[in-house]
Every structure is written in structure tokens, then in C-alpha cells.
Amino acid sequence: MDSAYKVLGVPGNATLQEITQAMQDALDHYSHAKMARDPDVIPRQIAIREAYKILSNEQMRAAHDRKLQSYVNRPRSAPKIAMEEVPPPWYTNFLYVGTLVVLSMFAIGGYMAHARDKARAAQEATILQEKKLAAEALALEDAERRRAEERLARQESENKARERQMAADASNSLRSAMLAESMAQTDMQRKADALQREKLRKESEAKSEERQRVYEAQRRLAADQQRIRELCYQQYRRFPC
Image (cartoon, rainbow, N blue to C red; front, top):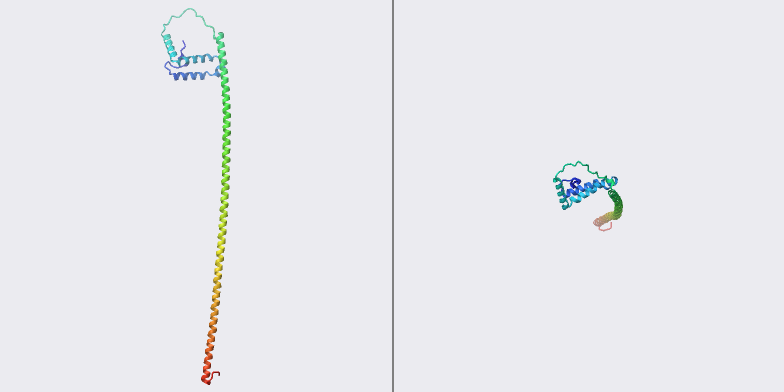
């Protein structure tokens, strides 16, 4: 008899995880595409699923193991001389062939539906990705626009601040120049006043000296006249000579 272990290619002490992995590997190998190309694969896949069904159930696996054990321990009979009847080929059994055709159709239909679903999912994923990229591009454009507006506003603010600073500097320079000019004019006026005062002082001193000279001359003249009168009186006993 065919062993379920042999069909899945696992040892007799295989764990449920190893059995499941072996079944999955076998189904991946005998895919729907391969079933559509080669109908002979269908019986193999059916046997794989039946073997997994037996080995994944503890009771069915125990019964299968007992059956294998009894098969191994059964007495060997002498070979028969008589010719056994050869069973007809599988393709002569219309029920079997019909079952294979129906399974093939289901497999092909499932594969095509899977392919359509996969294509639809890929198309939807592509659309979602395009929408996501468009949304990201729009968000980047909006962020760039906001940054440009912020840079422009900051630049305008800096220009206004620079203009205000330049105006303030110009006003300060003008005030400084006006103050310097005023101070220069004040200094010039002070110097002119000092020169004028010095001139007046010198003129006053000159006038005072002139008056002093006139006074001294008059005093000397008066003294001389007095001496002359005295001499006249001494000589002639009279003042007019």
C-alpha cells in the first residue's frame, strides 16, 4: 500500500509542522498553472491533500500507522502463477476522466480568478501608489510654496528693517552733521566774539593810553607854564613876562 508518509516525503516520526511544511512545498510545486498545463498533475495533488488529511489528524494518523504496521507484519504468500487481470487504463474510466476534467476546469478557473484578483490588486495598488505619490508631490509643493512665502515675507521684513535702519542712520548722520555744524558755528562765533572783545580791549587800551599821553602832555605843559610864571615873577616881579 502507498504510505501517506511516502506521498508527502516525510519520515514516520515527522511533526505536524514538518508535515504542514511538506504539504505546502508540494502544493507550491504542483501549482494551478502546472495543473492547467499538465492534467496528470491533478491526481498527484489529490493524493497529497489526502495524505495531509490523514497525517494532520491524530486518530486518522494512528489508524494509518496501525494499518501500515499490520501490512508490514502480514505473512508473505507464495507468488501466484496464474495471470492476474490487468486493470484498464485510467483514461478509459469516464467517471474518472470527467472528474479530472471538472477539477481541471475548477483549477483553471481558480487560477484565472486568482490571476484576475492579483492583477486587480496590483492595479489597485498601482492606483493607490500613484495617488500616494500625487498626494506626496502636492504636499511637497505646498510645503515648498509655504517655505517660499515665508522666505519672501522674511526677506521683505529684513528689507524694511534695513530701510528703517538706513533711515535712522541717515537721520543720525544728519543730526550729527547739523550738530557739528552748529558747534562749528558756535565755535566760530565764540572766536569772533573773542576777537571782537580783544579788538575792543585794545582800542580801549589805546584810547586810555592816548588820554593818558594827552593828560601827561597837558600836565607837563601846565607845569612848564607854572615854572615860566614863577621865573617871570622872580625876574620881573610879575607873572606875564
